[in-house]
Image (cartoon, rainbow, N blue to C red; front, side, top):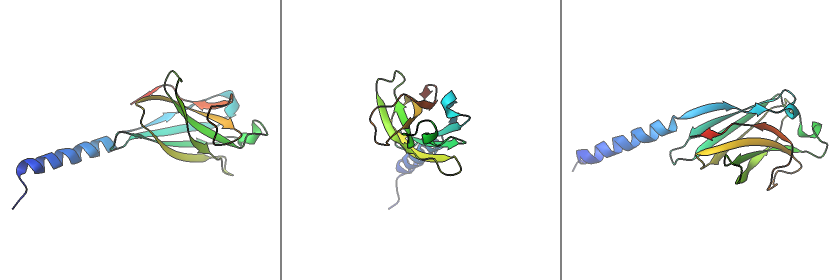
Length: 140
Protein backbone atom coordinates (compact mmCIF):
# COMPACT_ATOMS: atom_id res chain seq x y z
CA UNK A 1 0.00 0.00 0.00
CA UNK A 2 1.41 3.41 -0.99
CA UNK A 3 1.96 6.43 1.19
CA UNK A 4 -0.96 8.87 1.04
CA UNK A 5 -0.27 12.00 -0.99
CA UNK A 6 -0.71 14.23 2.09
CA UNK A 7 2.11 12.43 3.89
CA UNK A 8 4.34 12.85 0.84
CA UNK A 9 3.45 16.54 0.63
CA UNK A 10 4.23 16.97 4.34
CA UNK A 11 7.62 15.24 3.96
CA UNK A 12 8.47 17.36 0.94
CA UNK A 13 7.56 20.54 2.83
CA UNK A 14 9.57 19.45 5.87
CA UNK A 15 12.61 18.67 3.72
CA UNK A 16 12.34 22.05 1.98
CA UNK A 17 12.12 23.85 5.33
CA UNK A 18 15.19 22.04 6.65
CA UNK A 19 17.21 22.79 3.52
CA UNK A 20 16.11 26.44 3.52
CA UNK A 21 17.05 26.83 7.17
CA UNK A 22 20.39 25.12 6.68
CA UNK A 23 21.29 27.54 3.91
CA UNK A 24 20.95 30.66 6.04
CA UNK A 25 24.46 31.87 6.78
CA UNK A 26 26.20 35.20 7.23
CA UNK A 27 29.82 36.25 7.62
CA UNK A 28 30.41 39.02 10.15
CA UNK A 29 33.63 40.89 10.80
CA UNK A 30 34.64 41.58 14.38
CA UNK A 31 35.76 45.10 15.28
CA UNK A 32 39.46 45.01 16.14
CA UNK A 33 40.51 46.92 19.22
CA UNK A 34 43.99 48.51 19.37
CA UNK A 35 45.27 45.61 21.46
CA UNK A 36 44.68 43.33 18.43
CA UNK A 37 47.74 44.90 16.76
CA UNK A 38 46.42 44.60 13.22
CA UNK A 39 44.82 41.19 13.66
CA UNK A 40 41.49 40.35 12.10
CA UNK A 41 38.59 38.16 13.19
CA UNK A 42 35.45 36.99 11.40
CA UNK A 43 32.58 34.72 12.32
CA UNK A 44 30.35 32.72 10.03
CA UNK A 45 26.92 32.35 11.62
CA UNK A 46 24.67 29.63 10.25
CA UNK A 47 21.28 28.52 11.53
CA UNK A 48 21.11 24.76 12.05
CA UNK A 49 18.06 22.60 11.41
CA UNK A 50 17.30 22.60 15.16
CA UNK A 51 17.43 26.44 15.33
CA UNK A 52 20.83 26.76 16.99
CA UNK A 53 23.47 29.00 15.49
CA UNK A 54 26.74 27.42 14.42
CA UNK A 55 29.58 29.89 14.94
CA UNK A 56 32.78 29.41 12.97
CA UNK A 57 35.31 31.94 14.26
CA UNK A 58 38.52 32.61 12.33
CA UNK A 59 41.43 34.77 13.45
CA UNK A 60 44.28 35.90 11.22
CA UNK A 61 47.44 37.93 11.72
CA UNK A 62 46.88 37.99 15.49
CA UNK A 63 49.64 38.29 18.04
CA UNK A 64 50.26 35.42 20.41
CA UNK A 65 48.35 36.22 23.63
CA UNK A 66 51.63 36.31 25.56
CA UNK A 67 52.68 39.31 23.43
CA UNK A 68 49.90 41.28 25.14
CA UNK A 69 50.81 40.11 28.64
CA UNK A 70 53.29 37.37 29.54
CA UNK A 71 50.63 35.63 31.70
CA UNK A 72 48.19 35.22 28.79
CA UNK A 73 48.19 31.81 27.10
CA UNK A 74 45.12 31.86 24.86
CA UNK A 75 42.11 33.75 23.59
CA UNK A 76 38.57 33.01 24.75
CA UNK A 77 35.38 33.53 22.74
CA UNK A 78 32.44 34.90 24.73
CA UNK A 79 28.77 34.83 23.70
CA UNK A 80 26.64 37.38 25.52
CA UNK A 81 23.18 38.84 25.47
CA UNK A 82 23.23 42.34 23.93
CA UNK A 83 23.05 43.93 27.41
CA UNK A 84 25.91 41.62 28.56
CA UNK A 85 23.94 40.51 31.62
CA UNK A 86 24.47 36.90 30.56
CA UNK A 87 27.96 36.02 29.36
CA UNK A 88 29.11 32.50 28.48
CA UNK A 89 32.60 31.20 27.77
CA UNK A 90 32.07 29.54 24.37
CA UNK A 91 35.57 28.11 24.12
CA UNK A 92 39.26 28.78 23.99
CA UNK A 93 41.15 29.72 20.88
CA UNK A 94 44.81 28.82 20.46
CA UNK A 95 46.88 30.69 17.92
CA UNK A 96 49.19 28.61 15.71
CA UNK A 97 52.65 29.44 14.34
CA UNK A 98 51.17 31.25 11.35
CA UNK A 99 49.35 33.65 13.73
CA UNK A 100 45.92 32.27 12.84
CA UNK A 101 43.27 30.29 14.66
CA UNK A 102 39.86 28.76 14.13
CA UNK A 103 37.13 27.34 16.35
CA UNK A 104 33.52 26.23 15.98
CA UNK A 105 30.77 26.29 18.59
CA UNK A 106 27.00 26.71 18.94
CA UNK A 107 24.65 29.16 20.59
CA UNK A 108 20.86 28.99 20.92
CA UNK A 109 20.58 32.78 21.26
CA UNK A 110 18.77 34.75 18.55
CA UNK A 111 20.19 38.13 19.61
CA UNK A 112 23.75 38.22 20.90
CA UNK A 113 27.18 39.82 20.80
CA UNK A 114 30.51 38.06 20.51
CA UNK A 115 33.82 39.18 21.91
CA UNK A 116 37.26 37.69 22.34
CA UNK A 117 39.53 38.31 25.29
CA UNK A 118 43.10 37.33 26.10
CA UNK A 119 43.17 35.08 29.16
CA UNK A 120 45.55 33.14 31.40
CA UNK A 121 43.39 30.00 31.21
CA UNK A 122 40.71 28.70 28.89
CA UNK A 123 38.26 27.70 31.62
CA UNK A 124 37.64 31.17 33.06
CA UNK A 125 34.03 31.95 33.90
CA UNK A 126 34.19 35.74 33.62
CA UNK A 127 35.91 37.74 30.87
CA UNK A 128 39.13 39.55 31.70
CA UNK A 129 39.76 43.20 30.90
CA UNK A 130 41.69 42.76 27.66
CA UNK A 131 39.06 42.58 24.92
CA UNK A 132 40.80 42.06 21.59
CA UNK A 133 37.83 41.73 19.20
CA UNK A 134 34.08 42.36 19.46
CA UNK A 135 31.02 42.38 17.24
CA UNK A 136 28.03 44.63 17.09
CA UNK A 137 24.72 43.05 18.10
CA UNK A 138 23.86 40.06 15.92
CA UNK A 139 20.15 39.45 15.34
CA UNK A 140 19.18 36.20 13.75
